[in-house]
Image 1 (cartoon, helix red, strand yellow):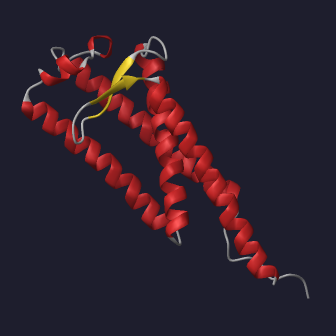
Image 2: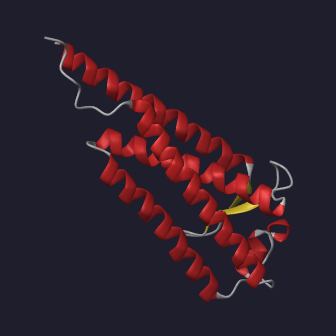
Length: 167
């Protein structure tokens, strides 16, 4: 009698599915931002983005953007809750999906509107709870780190499950 099939899902298909989600979601988010900036041509464009320009935005627009940001995080948390079997899998899922989403967001903006001009270009990363303005390299480094941590967690989880199954 051969070895019994593992109830665990293979790591590569899980990562590919999460990456597909992150890429699709990041692209959608970038398209939304491009449309908002085009429709609201009086809102600061990326090249004009400063803490002062964000502070001058109408309250209704800031609140609308905050709800979009909150919905983004809720969607990523819901994915993690549904896809993960325990806290570490949920955490790894969230980190991986967030990282891929964010990297795709910046890549899509670069393709669509040729922005950011460089990794030193400033961006408003989040508006919750207050505006976070930083150079684009910061979210790129953080998102890449999140992906690396997530992959490390997934590998450790799979190794631990394989060791338990072997004993």
